[in-house]
Length: 154
Image 1 (cartoon, rainbow, N blue to C red):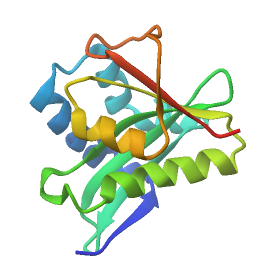
Image 2: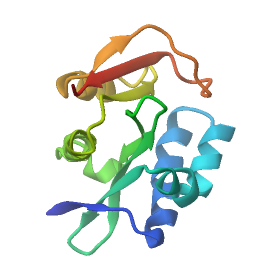
Image 3: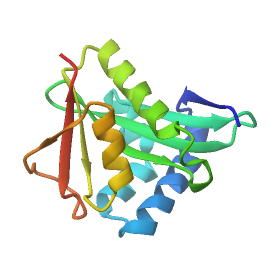
Protein backbone atom coordinates (compact mmCIF):
# COMPACT_ATOMS: atom_id res chain seq x y z
CA UNK A 1 0.00 0.00 0.00
CA UNK A 2 1.33 3.42 -0.93
CA UNK A 3 1.47 5.96 1.87
CA UNK A 4 2.52 9.59 1.67
CA UNK A 5 3.63 12.03 4.37
CA UNK A 6 1.79 15.36 4.30
CA UNK A 7 1.52 18.47 6.43
CA UNK A 8 -1.32 18.45 8.95
CA UNK A 9 -4.56 20.12 7.98
CA UNK A 10 -7.22 21.09 10.56
CA UNK A 11 -9.49 18.28 9.33
CA UNK A 12 -6.79 15.80 10.42
CA UNK A 13 -7.34 16.74 14.10
CA UNK A 14 -9.76 13.88 14.90
CA UNK A 15 -7.40 11.30 13.34
CA UNK A 16 -4.40 12.79 15.18
CA UNK A 17 -6.29 12.38 18.46
CA UNK A 18 -7.59 8.86 17.68
CA UNK A 19 -4.21 7.53 16.50
CA UNK A 20 -2.49 8.83 19.64
CA UNK A 21 -5.20 7.76 22.07
CA UNK A 22 -4.93 4.24 20.63
CA UNK A 23 -1.20 3.79 21.31
CA UNK A 24 -1.06 5.71 24.56
CA UNK A 25 -4.12 3.91 25.93
CA UNK A 26 -2.67 0.53 24.94
CA UNK A 27 0.50 1.08 27.01
CA UNK A 28 -0.15 3.87 29.51
CA UNK A 29 -2.73 6.19 31.02
CA UNK A 30 -3.62 9.25 28.96
CA UNK A 31 -2.24 12.17 30.96
CA UNK A 32 -3.37 15.79 31.29
CA UNK A 33 -0.52 16.95 29.01
CA UNK A 34 -1.64 14.44 26.35
CA UNK A 35 -5.21 15.70 26.54
CA UNK A 36 -4.08 19.32 26.25
CA UNK A 37 -2.20 18.66 22.99
CA UNK A 38 -4.63 16.11 21.50
CA UNK A 39 -7.64 18.35 22.10
CA UNK A 40 -6.03 21.37 20.42
CA UNK A 41 -3.15 20.47 18.07
CA UNK A 42 -3.60 23.68 16.08
CA UNK A 43 -3.33 25.92 19.14
CA UNK A 44 -0.78 23.91 21.12
CA UNK A 45 1.55 22.96 18.24
CA UNK A 46 0.98 24.77 14.95
CA UNK A 47 0.18 28.22 16.37
CA UNK A 48 3.43 28.08 18.36
CA UNK A 49 5.53 27.47 15.24
CA UNK A 50 5.46 23.68 15.29
CA UNK A 51 4.60 21.16 12.62
CA UNK A 52 2.58 17.99 12.42
CA UNK A 53 3.03 15.40 9.71
CA UNK A 54 0.37 12.86 8.81
CA UNK A 55 0.87 9.58 6.96
CA UNK A 56 -2.04 9.04 4.56
CA UNK A 57 -2.97 6.07 2.37
CA UNK A 58 -3.97 6.46 -1.28
CA UNK A 59 -7.55 6.82 -0.03
CA UNK A 60 -6.48 9.63 2.34
CA UNK A 61 -6.96 7.42 5.40
CA UNK A 62 -4.65 8.61 8.22
CA UNK A 63 -2.37 5.78 9.36
CA UNK A 64 0.34 7.67 11.24
CA UNK A 65 1.41 11.01 12.63
CA UNK A 66 4.16 12.92 14.39
CA UNK A 67 4.42 16.42 15.88
CA UNK A 68 7.33 18.82 16.21
CA UNK A 69 6.85 21.18 19.15
CA UNK A 70 9.12 24.25 19.29
CA UNK A 71 11.52 24.47 22.22
CA UNK A 72 13.06 27.54 23.87
CA UNK A 73 16.54 26.71 22.50
CA UNK A 74 15.31 26.75 18.88
CA UNK A 75 15.08 22.98 18.68
CA UNK A 76 11.97 20.87 18.38
CA UNK A 77 10.52 18.19 20.58
CA UNK A 78 9.36 15.20 18.55
CA UNK A 79 6.06 14.14 20.09
CA UNK A 80 2.88 12.19 19.47
CA UNK A 81 4.52 9.87 16.95
CA UNK A 82 2.54 6.76 16.11
CA UNK A 83 1.71 4.40 13.28
CA UNK A 84 -1.55 2.46 13.09
CA UNK A 85 -1.15 -1.15 14.20
CA UNK A 86 -2.12 -2.36 10.69
CA UNK A 87 0.74 -0.40 9.11
CA UNK A 88 3.59 -1.22 11.50
CA UNK A 89 6.73 -2.71 9.99
CA UNK A 90 6.28 -0.90 6.66
CA UNK A 91 8.80 1.89 7.36
CA UNK A 92 6.27 4.60 8.20
CA UNK A 93 7.88 5.44 11.54
CA UNK A 94 11.18 5.98 9.74
CA UNK A 95 9.47 8.14 7.08
CA UNK A 96 7.71 10.25 9.72
CA UNK A 97 10.95 10.75 11.67
CA UNK A 98 12.83 11.64 8.47
CA UNK A 99 10.18 14.30 7.76
CA UNK A 100 10.95 15.78 11.19
CA UNK A 101 14.71 15.65 10.66
CA UNK A 102 14.41 17.32 7.26
CA UNK A 103 12.00 20.01 8.50
CA UNK A 104 14.10 20.80 11.57
CA UNK A 105 17.29 21.02 9.51
CA UNK A 106 15.56 23.29 6.98
CA UNK A 107 14.39 25.51 9.88
CA UNK A 108 17.97 25.73 11.17
CA UNK A 109 17.13 23.98 14.45
CA UNK A 110 20.10 22.87 16.55
CA UNK A 111 18.47 19.61 17.64
CA UNK A 112 15.51 17.31 17.88
CA UNK A 113 14.58 16.14 21.37
CA UNK A 114 12.17 13.44 22.52
CA UNK A 115 10.85 11.78 25.62
CA UNK A 116 9.80 8.13 25.65
CA UNK A 117 9.50 5.08 27.86
CA UNK A 118 11.94 2.19 28.26
CA UNK A 119 9.12 -0.32 27.59
CA UNK A 120 8.80 0.95 23.99
CA UNK A 121 11.78 -0.99 22.62
CA UNK A 122 10.84 -0.80 18.90
CA UNK A 123 10.44 2.98 19.11
CA UNK A 124 13.75 3.39 20.95
CA UNK A 125 15.49 1.22 18.34
CA UNK A 126 14.09 3.42 15.57
CA UNK A 127 15.23 6.59 17.34
CA UNK A 128 18.75 5.22 17.76
CA UNK A 129 18.83 4.13 14.11
CA UNK A 130 17.82 7.68 13.16
CA UNK A 131 20.76 9.18 15.06
CA UNK A 132 19.26 9.92 18.48
CA UNK A 133 21.40 9.48 21.59
CA UNK A 134 20.36 9.09 25.22
CA UNK A 135 20.40 12.09 27.53
CA UNK A 136 20.41 12.27 31.34
CA UNK A 137 16.98 12.70 32.94
CA UNK A 138 15.29 15.99 32.09
CA UNK A 139 12.30 17.79 33.64
CA UNK A 140 9.10 16.38 32.11
CA UNK A 141 5.35 16.79 32.32
CA UNK A 142 4.83 13.06 31.64
CA UNK A 143 4.71 10.47 34.43
CA UNK A 144 5.43 7.70 31.89
CA UNK A 145 8.67 9.24 30.63
CA UNK A 146 11.87 7.50 31.73
CA UNK A 147 14.03 7.93 28.59
CA UNK A 148 15.23 11.22 27.10
CA UNK A 149 16.99 11.44 23.73
CA UNK A 150 18.23 14.00 21.22
CA UNK A 151 19.65 14.22 17.75
CA UNK A 152 22.00 17.12 17.19
CA UNK A 153 21.50 18.81 13.83
CA UNK A 154 24.37 21.32 14.03
